[in-house]
Length: 65
Image (cartoon, rainbow, N blue to C red; front, top):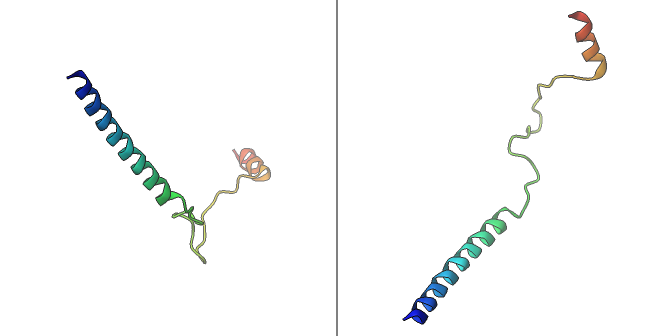
């Protein structure tokens, strides 16, 4: 009876391990082609709002305060 439980346990373990491996490889294959652009990257012709934090600009802001 103990050997039956051992066989059933190993069978279920193999099924779960195989399923986990299959899911892992499917997720890796789905994500492997890297996208060349970030989804939030600006499209051609769009302008960006940015803050200029070079040394001269920071010194100018500091001296005004």
